[in-house]
Length: 571
Image (cartoon, rainbow, N blue to C red; front, top):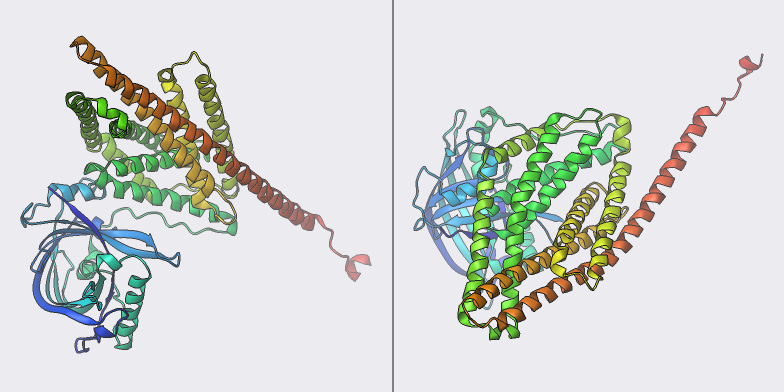
């Protein structure tokens, strides 16, 4: 089943029932009304009994009527506009009725997208919406459609205990895809916001039609464990509050990526592996804050490591495939005949698909469900250490980073020393490459946590973080090239056994090894950039520590200062 993905950028207002339609041609860049049509829309929304999707800002429905009848999944997407401000947009995933007709059973591809949120619960219809929509397409002077304005009359029926029948009017202005990005789209949205406000319309009290339809039922529905909201007691607790936020943010990213990974998105798989690495480091440090940490923290760390093993196997298979396809695109590969090329491609595709299937199975086994449940429980019951330990959080994180930096340098030194040995075959360095990659991943994860809880203007960890990402990427690519060279060598041996010409295989084999060396060389160059970023970070940390110590000493001096004697004391 083919899912279609897009990002919708829109603004919504609630006008009074008798408010006149705004003068849409007064909007910046709009010169004509391209068309106006009226549709009757009927939508059925799905959720769990405790409304987990709604609480996560997700809506899942099928809708009839209009030009986009079918299944729709919408979820928040955080983006940054030109001013550097966070703008909440929504990703829309659609599936036509030709692929999967309207039913009380949610299509498997869409079910995969929200699987991690459900915690084993089933989806059932929870709300129905009937909408009379008047849609107006707005065009520029060149007849290009810039936006769609919808004037909706909505009647909703909640299918849950406590739900009520509701009716309201809603205006939406949704940007067309060509103007979604850039200042043109922002001017159009700003213009409509002013136009609607001048007519007395106001922003919705609840962000979406679906959430508004179940607002009353939401108050009486069963409640899942909510993420912990911890209020810092003093300014020294701000770092720990950010530490909690970091865990919860990466936990949420894991849930979002789960659906894309199930759908076979290899980029999402690599991103999920990064999130797993960050969560492992957070849990490892959290456990170190307590003399007797809860066994659940250690168990979660083990489950995350098992998940990383599954994701890593697929990651390396994809890197091998990418390296081989890159090699076959080179001019020298023109000497490889059609049969040999087909064998190589089929071999790497077969391995790639095999690992994708194993990865999906790894997301359906009981240990993974236990991991999701445990992470949700920890997000709701995040343990709080003593005030003294909380105050030293940043220093502790930096000490961990310092230790990992030393490990990273050592693994790089050993790797380069081995490569500089003329007797060393590059294929023999695979274990060293794996160890160096592991150190780079750990450094990247720890730098991510540090970046999450500190102000980049005060604590410049971003440069180190970016350098670690590039190093990890190049080392993975080097491993992929070496794996490709092993595959090429196997196919070459097979060709010789069948008395076929293996000369072209030899050219590809050498090209693969040179590609691996090139990637390692790039990682080494990026390591020099990382070293500069590290020394700058280290210098900043020492300054902050010295400043804190001086402040502490000053406070102590004030405490031991003798008070002035009063006249009564002198007598």
